Length: 356
Picture 1 (cartoon, rainbow, N blue to C red):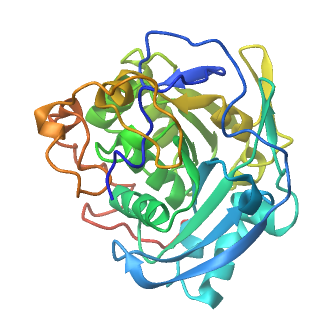
Picture 2: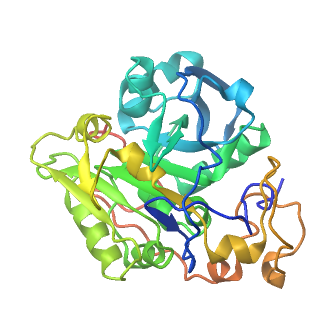
C-alpha cells in the first residue's frame, strides 16, 4: 500500500472557495466528483483486534446512506475527542466517544446528511477514533493507512481533521507534523490543548493549510493563548489562506457545542458558512500532488502522463503513507519540542486530568 494509491495527482481539480497546496492555476468551477444526494447514514462501532500505533483501540465510523450504492469517494472528517472520552476502544468504551462533537450530533440525529457548497452537495464520512492516551500525529497517520487498507472510499483530496480540547491539541499536532500535514485539506482545532511552536507554525503557513480555530476567551481549563499564539505565528508567515480564529465570550471550557453546531455560521468572504461548509470549501491540490503524479485507486482517470518524481521520493512502492512525501517535506527542519501546558512537566505524554 503506497501513498501513490491514496493521493490523486495530475487531475483537473475543482476549486470552491479555495484550493490548498499552492496551485498556480484555478480550473473553472464544476460539479465535484464527490458530490451526490444527501442521504442520512449510520454510525457504527469498529473494534480493532490490535491497537493502531499502540493508541487507537477502535473508532466510530459514519458513512452516508448511499455509500453502498454510489461507488464514488466521499470527504473524510476525522474527529479527535477530549480527555474525558479516552478508552481502550472496546464496544462499551466507544460509547463515550459520542458524548461530544460531530459523533454526538450523528447519534442524536442532528448531523446534516449533506452540505451544499458552491452548487455541489457533499456528504462526510466521519471517523472518530478512541485514544488510550494523549494522541500523536503518528496515530492519525496510522488511522488513515488503516482506513485505506480496508478499502474505505474516502476522497484523499478531502481529508479534514478536527477535535476538541485534547483532540484539538491532536489537530494542531497533525497540522504541524511533516508526515501528516501533506495529507490534510483543512483543520479545525477547538479549544486545542497545544501551544504553538514557531517551526510548526511556519510549516503550516508554507503549506498554505487552511485553519479555523475556535476557543472561549475565558477558558479556565485550556488557555486561549494556545489559539492566539497559533494564529499569530501562522499568519506572521503570510500563508495564502490566512489562519482564522473565533473567540467566543465565555468563561466555560465548552467551546465545542457552539463550534460544531451546524446552525452556527460566520460570514466568510461573503458567504455564511458553518465549520463543515468551511472545510468543504477547500480541497487538496497544487504542485506537490501534480508533480508527484499520484493517482486515486478508485478509478479516477489521470490526465496525461505523470511527471517524474524526485529520486528521493521515488524509491519503491511498498511503503506506507508518508514514506513517499516529496523531498521538500523530507528535508524540513526537525520539529520543535512542544511547549508544556501550565504546570505540566515536559515529556512524551500529557496528563489527562482536568481536560475534556
